[in-house]
Length: 290
Length: 255
Ligand SMILES: Nc1ncnc2c1ncn2[C@@H]1O[C@H](COP(=O)(O)OP(=O)(O)OP(=O)(O)O)[C@@H](O)[C@H]1O
Ligand SMILES: Nc1ncnc2c1ncn2[C@@H]1O[C@H](COP(=O)(O)OP(=O)(O)OP(=O)(O)O)[C@@H](O)[C@H]1O
Ligand SMILES: [Mg+2]
Ligand SMILES: [Mg+2]
Image (cartoon, rainbow over all chains, first blue to last red; front, side):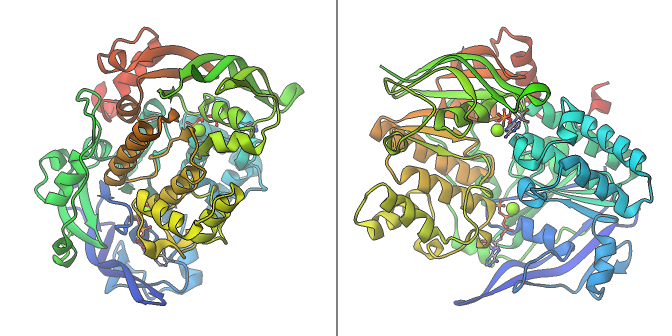
């Protein structure tokens, strides 16, 4: 559980992500503030609500002409906003790493996956090839890959959806970052492998004090896995709650999301569909700062 | 009348020492109009079964019968009017430099439709995207918006059999509900047959009357939705999946 007496790893104040378009500026994230301690912080919300853009903005990975604005994005007290692109490269991967929502898209299609994980390890540690290779195989095994040797020598297109996702996870965890931003990291995994992968992340948080931002559509999973949850709508935070209280959330939007889930033990003909209220967009963003 | 019949299907990749046996001796039949699920371990061969049916995995043996026709190793355009697939990975399945409009109009003209303008509007509306999305490129769409475009593309030729590979795993739960309701309606209206892969047991149970459970290339069990809901599984792996689907318990806490 997060402990308020501990200093925060990350503090984000008044974050905006804006895209100039032909029909004016589109604000994908609209002035949100939150903090991250040594905890598992969930971000949920419907498609397009700005979850991925929030994660990417922290690492300044928003493609031009999009831009990031914030009063402050500070990592252990150091503001990242004024850093040069070169200085940001030293932050990415090493201090904060991100598992992207689109695993195969983020891997180099012409390089063997083992090679790519080894490189991620060697960028920040001066380990030998033999050591990096062993670390890579161990990591593949840790994310429940059945035959690590084969996958080490495979190209991205030779992997199943869930295998590609686990390769990305291995690659992002191997440099041992202080903060891990995981964007839908287990959406392609069967529930059993999912449990094993979450267990590794859980250990990194509990044993090494890593901070985890866990972006997911899976409300039941977030409720059982995370400590706190930010619920996003239209680029803002509409509600913040303790994860184990997610099922008691108050906001009609959060309730709508919860009610649209199919349930194994409660069959129905038609699923409930969320009815959006335009007024939600204009509500002020709730602070997620602890 | 069966929509899909698989008999002794083996699918493999590579050869010699590098051979990977992705699907081993798969057998099942899906009657026309039924919705059948494939669930199971990641890497167990679920997508490969769909890819063998659509002709994307070319090294296979056994028998595949679609709509009464036994398939060879080549697929003609008639086949793709009957069978369409929605891919697992919405990022890889859309061309990065084609707008939504291009993707859909290309598919429509390929299958000889006219009245393309109206059809595109209707398709976008069907999958819950407004006309404002029509001229966007894939990188200007969120993950869920891309998957809706991919579903619209699959619906365009008005197929009778849809192969759905994790159609909603990239979608948020509210869009998932909309898409699942849409698929349910389309199936009822047009008598469609579905073969659907998902690792979400509640989703498969909502959509399918029967499902096959796969592990390491094998179908280990075929069971009805009632058995799934009632936790009446006979194979240990299926029971393990059912137990894991109840939510995350830290291994620490479990000890
Ligand atoms: N390059 C761009 N130009 C214009 N709008 C964009 C661009 N990139 C993203 N957007 C918009 O920004 C909004 C937020 O996108 P984001 O990817 O953060 O959504 P998300 O909450 O992660 O959704 P999902 O759950 O579907 O992944 C979306 O409405 C998207 O269409
Ligand atoms: N082009 C390929 N070349 C070599 N091996 C492949 C290729 N495509 C798939 N495989 C292998 O076949 C096996 C089955 O893959 P498949 O994609 O069918 O799994 P899946 O059940 O769909 O898994 P997931 O749930 O993770 O998507 C995996 O071991 C994979 O590495
Ligand atoms: Mg996203
Ligand atoms: Mg697959």
